[in-house]
Length: 111
Length: 114
Image 1 (cartoon, rainbow over the protein chains, first blue to last red):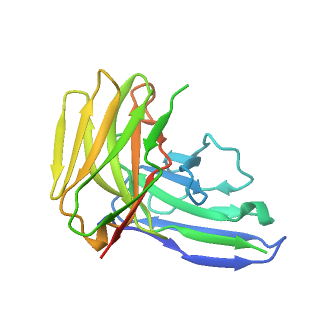
Image 2: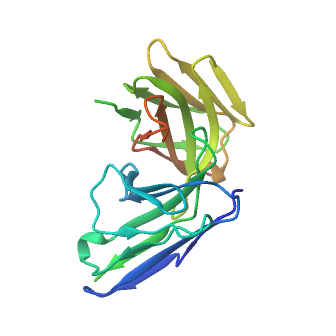
């Protein structure tokens, strides 16, 4: 089992609130990723990072932002949550393009 | 357009039975193909990874096959157990970028009944 952690696991929050989803890995991986997944649908890449101070937007447009100040930490922030942001958010990390290790996910519900 | 299609969308089998899940892809240039198992409310966990030159790879009761010519893969589960109930996701990686871009299928939702 990979050492990648996400908190909180579940979050219910009202519209307009600012939220930060945490992701940490202890494997020393340079590459980290954020995916969004709706029920029964495929994962969509929303952000990725090659290393410290490197962040890029993914395939799916997202109003969220990310930062990578430390190798092990890759938080995702929503400045003003909306019901359309309700989804599962999965964080992953990798040392190469060959394998990605996923965290347990955060189930976000915006009311 | 790079795509990954999985079938069936859902499957119900009895405990102890075998089943086979299918994956067709159009990703090019091909790098590798992975099968992940995702339990409800959890992140995907890798079962197998196969490169272009590999035809078959096993991981316990899971056996994946790859036909790179027809761009098809299958995941065979032997002697199913209740704990096999999960979504099985086929993921294909291309060689076209240093990121190793992943293309995800929507998964096959497998339910194993006692």
